[in-house]
Image 1 (cartoon, rainbow, N blue to C red):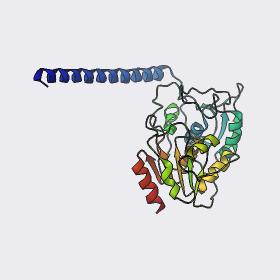
Image 2: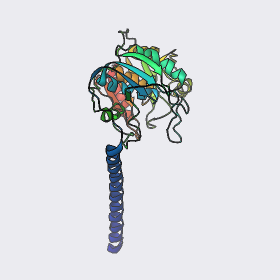
Image 3: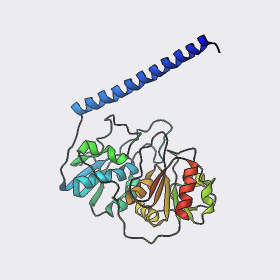
Length: 300
């Protein structure tokens, strides 16, 4: 290539770099303006710690679990009202197993025993148009926070002016006897496609929690994995709590493992890493070699 051609290529590369920088600045400016607009006109419910308070939540089950630290930071005893009528706002191609409803009534019934097992929650009921609550846990929606990154638990903190040490458990169960099972959960959403679970077949006791279609899918790579069917989410939590190690992706069962701080590995989604393991024995898994090394080291 002659000198003139080289200069032209360098010129094109400089233009491309300037375009990308300008695009990034525009995006950052939009985020800043949106946040400023919300700061001027949005709704906040800043809270001082109190003896009791009631809360509303319309999100998926995992979001409910990640909202519990905010509830604990506001009140010693709490009542939670779950909105069964809220529709999912997921983008196309991200269909949730629950369908269009974020919290179907049957799911609320499965969630209630787990929530009521916690000493700081004294009531879990269905939210209706006549329900009056002290705090709306849906306030973070539409605030221009980057919900594809960070930690879901932290989405709530700015809306109420609170914080919580999420390295400590916020779901506690009576001590259950540990077994030798590695418990796995892998939903159809938020997969890291570079990871292969097949190497786990060399470990003798493997169990799966989740819906049957997810179990059928993982059996393709781990054929002899057992299916743990549960009646409700308290039973699910007991299964996870009794495992020697829990492995999951960014789904509801992992939120329970995170809340209890059991030994756990998180298959981290590369395009929406909004779950971060904190506290206890925990690792975010990004690479296959890392995955195999950490499991092998833990199980040795």
